[in-house]
Length: 233
Length: 254
Image (cartoon, rainbow over the protein chains, first blue to last red):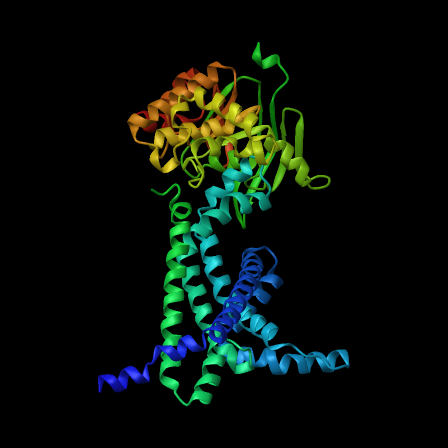
């Protein structure tokens, strides 16, 4: 029985296809990095709009975060890939297409920008108003007070939350195969079909993801530990 | 003699309301350069709001504020521009009840932040000035510490150095010792007295009747958003003309 199990989990199959699988993983990583950057940039703008003075911007920002947070990311992904190009095509009167990679980055970036905006907003609000007042009294503009005083403190506070969200985002990149991005899951399913042996590759993919995420979070936490604790030790 | 000098602070008919509550009901005041004015009064009398209106941390509802020739007026004529307010703030240093040091910066970083960010000074020059003022408050040896490592009294002295580094014309103290234990209050008051002896013009909102009485040139008693008593410490403490002031002082001293 053990022999049967060993044969089912045969790691040599994984090794045989290492190049294809690695290429898939690189796809996941690049979608992860690009959508993470998109999400963080959009989240910063949305969070600042929510805390700003303009009521209209506040409503728009709140509507946006609610939409992002309450729409399943798979639905969002499919919508961006299939529906958005149709709408744009109708609007500009000629054929418009989004590549699967770009659609994946936009879909996931938008989906996670909602969560990140909420986290960032909470972080910014948690900084005592006296911090900004001291900056104002010394002559700093609202912009430099935000950049030098408020944001660095807020980021330190929300960093663990942001890391969790980035981990989720990385995991979510595995659904992009559903819109034909040739990521690792796409490769695994293709090879599994060809070889008629689903067990080793799917198991291998699970283990690989787990290892990549654990190592990446550990390294990241190690790098940011000193920065995050500065002034609170 | 001081009274004849051109005033460094001139406040005219200052009003401040929140919704329908009027906190300041017309405050007018001139202060001669180099004088130390203590502002006393019960909580809710408007003394903190008064101080915070001077540097536009709170926007006055109406009135004119002129500090060392820079004036901003609300209620008549165009509203003061951002630059106008920035120039006014550059004349004023402020010290808060809660210190409000920036916890993610070192002591020296706190003191030099305004120099590098507002005055656009180079790091080296800023550090030199920063160390000069840290020496003044006797904390040069803590320059590389983070605020969390300091006692409350030390933190407040850093906050004073931070304000002084910008070389303001007037220092505003908003209950600077109210959140300190008595033994830590002393070191902060000593720094404030030294500053007064150096000739700094100071407006001090305080509950420290001892400081008001023997370190200031003039004491102002605020009640319900108006100046109710204004005079030399001896006069205000020993022979106030207002009955309310008399009551406040006898209860504060007992």
